[in-house]
Image 1 (cartoon, rainbow, N blue to C red):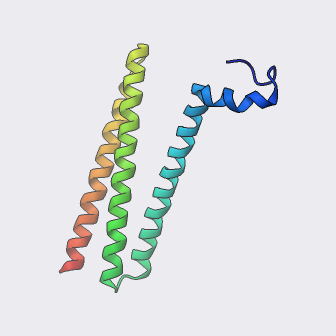
Image 2 (image 1 turned 180 degrees about the horizontal axis):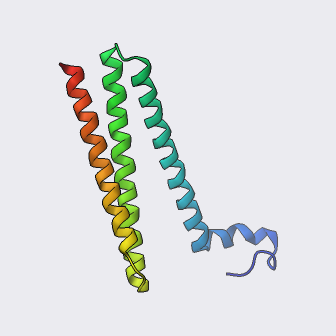
Image 3 (image 1 turned 90 degrees about the horizontal axis):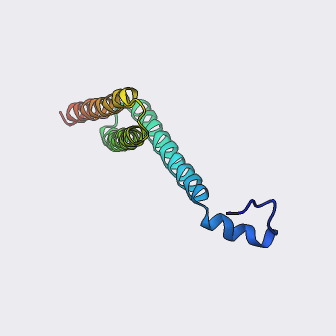
Length: 125
């Protein structure tokens, strides 16, 4: 790929479309936006639970949203850690930190799901 500053502006779009770095940036920013939206949805669900503690129907829905978000965040973080481990291993770099992060993400997701499940059971009683 040629440097965009050396090619005419009419060719920049085509160069971007063929660039692997461009698509890497697009994917990274898209996933970051989805991840941030999921975290905000989880915080919103938590706010609903705390603002309506006496309405079990609203609390159930909010807790289900929170469980879904917790699973999404935990699993996507774990998948990211797996990709980091594979990349580090290919490069011959240490993977211990990534393995610890993977385990922590999985434990956090499982703990969140269990806590929310217990809260839902309490609401049903």
